[in-house]
Length: 260
Image (cartoon, rainbow, N blue to C red; front, top):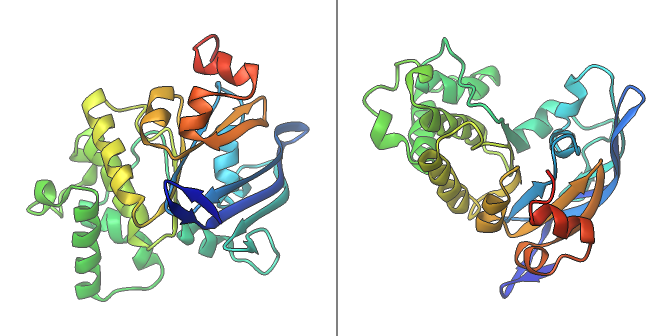
């Protein structure tokens, strides 16, 4: 365990020498780091440095990409998710994913966007599904806005509301970890700040890993920050320490906006 602001943190995810190739190109190289339970960990670095690849390797979504190959280990609560006996579908329910562009299923209602994962598992109990819809929409701050139009298409919502709907969809299957890949980059500043406030609230229940190009966002809401550069983990530290006293010159230059 590690101590953060007087609280002992438990390791939720640990990567050991995690590497990913696309064909002959190595996108990330021997990354070893720990993600702590009920914290926000930001992954920062310039475009093309492997941030999204790293994120997708944490819940085996990388396997969906043709030609991708993974080496190393990713432990969730001490169990390597790449072991042969581990079902990737089960992993993706425990480690949910929210993408850069809000992507509600365009032909589905708000209600069905949220429960689709549960229905695919064979859950049909309407009372249970109703409860999940209300609970998750309340968690993401959408319930009051949409409770009277649950059966209208989710695509009709504003961009910020659509992203919160996608987060609600991820929460519906009761994950332990939420991965977010640039979740506010397609949103206006006000909507982006609402998502940030939501993530700060959600970390009370969930472990959050956030890829962001927005250095100020990482500084505002993350507890830990990892800086990636050309596929390598250059520095990983508590956010307040990394931003004030980075150990590596290349980290300092990136934080100062010299490149990126």
